[in-house]
Image (cartoon, rainbow, N blue to C red; front, top):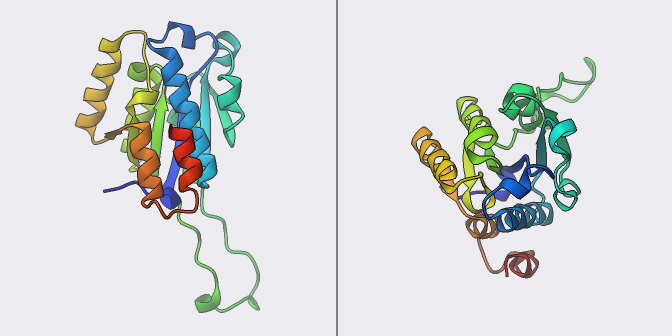
Length: 198
């Protein structure tokens, strides 16, 4: 199955000021996260951020935070435990109107939540892992962007990827996400997206 921009949401987990210097290959990890957020904004994909204990670890990198629709401060390692699921799948709104409203066949159907969750973050084996596993448990389709994820050691990062793949998450790269969201070189945002990737 390919990613669909119209059914996707992007979740960026804990790219925080006091955490990033300890992350292996942190400059590339952060650059890919920013690239993902820019691509998402370009293509109308909602972007959500999370921050673990921001009073101690600081906020997300400013260039990334500015691209998020909202940022969730959390103490639990899994952002789902702190309410991320409600952001991704908001509760259905009660029907508006009275007995004189439009007949059912003319009413607009309620909008379905976007079920494809593209997720990346730090540390891969802690907050990213626990958030992604909870999203899978909540029956979202989860894509983990490996080149935008990091841990203090490659061994911890790779162990997280092995576990996530075994649990049913799809492992992808930033470029895979971009080209699946585009689907064609004729997409109106192709040139702008290509400039972000190069």
